Length: 428
Image (cartoon, rainbow, N blue to C red):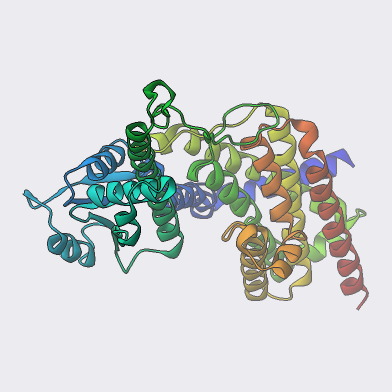
């Protein structure tokens, strides 16, 4: 039996290496796919903090509010700050035109006398509270309106991030001025100056925020386009092996060699084992090449290098499980198909469908609830979630064992279907 297995492995290996163009496509195209998709998605989905939002600032106030907001925006990584347009100080009209033309994503205009209006409002509030100035009770509070100009082409998600951040920051600066003015006004009417409230607002920030990416080991693995795309498209490439594998099966059928193989006293699964072993090795080589792209080639384009986590064993087990699942699927497609054309269409379209459902093209968390539940049945999703556990969450081999088990059960299921289908076709 071992002699027969080695013979089938040798046959498949020779058939594979003779098609040099097809072999180069199997290895080179997935590497190019990873580079292109990663570069595109890195540019398209880079976080605001990494890139900065082009922002033009118009300060008509020239007092505390305008100065503090300007200083804060200049020091904020969220913004690519500018207060001039074409070398001239920006005005409200110039900013409106520049934002409408897409030169800036956001424009902020501080009105003239904004700080004075805030101080007048606080003075009136103190007077009303202490009832020290009856004339002030009849005055109307001055309103302060800060204009935020927004490029109409801005995406809704980016717009929400920008406006919420700007509102929060501007409110903090306004409250700081209010507290300072309030303290000064109270100090003027309290006889004992030492009992007057101190302006501690500027020195103390009561609530701070710290963003931490959750990880099993506590390692700081930052999600980025490389961490997502390398495993995702590696999985896609491994499953795309189903097309040449099913084509190889159909070619044997059309040439009649499968009938000669069936005359041998061997089971169908033994004859298929040669194909499975050769194509599993191909999948493993594919994965190693694509890991090398993430580790060594993508950094040459200014992208971060792939962080592989902490478990080489986990990566090996998950890759092996994915390779077996992909080759088993290819054998099943080749056995079910009646022609090479049918195998090519069935294989390519089904892999595209499974990859879409599995989260390769679209992340599952933005899918509708029904589609999220369906995606849990895609073998590509099992593999992708396993690599996320290893590459993003700092998981170990034990954390992906269930995913590996599901992939191997999928392999056994596809091989069972292929064996039963072949038996039925031989009996017809």
